[in-house]
Length: 250
Ligand code: G3P
Image (cartoon, rainbow, N blue to C red; front, side, top):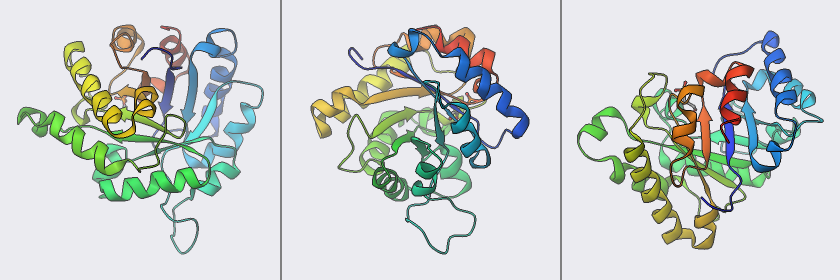
């Protein structure tokens, strides 16, 4: 999308111990320089590393975020973390509605929307994930699914500032498979049109990331597709060299 600053984001999922902080340190160093004015970078480590990770990025443009938050501000929710806790650790982003949360924790569009609202309340940017399964794609339902998930998972007060969309075809996550660039282009153009219909000029500027088996070898092609405003990277974001190679395709 012209005039938007792309976002190259890493989702570490349930990977990473204190030893992995060396990778964050290397990424924080590696993204320094003029390219960072053009391209924004973000790593979402597990919550256990959040506070230390933000400290390591003190003098770096690398942003740090979390992978999920609870929809409530506080209370009796054993094991959950709130958006306020993420902000308190100096995190600035939170992923909500990742397909692994939707599947493993039965998260619905309605819940994802509430989580995005909780993120806004703590001034976090929500990365709202959507995407079709293999069966849905085979049945020709991809665009219908994206339409439903966008409409039901996004709060009415979403803006280009507080919200990023991540399109992750579920069958492309961790599989090494990616859609063709034609398929990516079609899906992203469709999401763009839906966002503009609902949010007008904000929808035009809202970043739509592609996620699912992004790696250094395919990043240039995928990031070059119209309406792809960056990447949400799983496996290839664990290693600083891979993450930085993807950042540098811009
Ligand atoms: O959130 C990113 C993710 O689901 C993609 O994972 O390992 O296919 O890049 P991966």
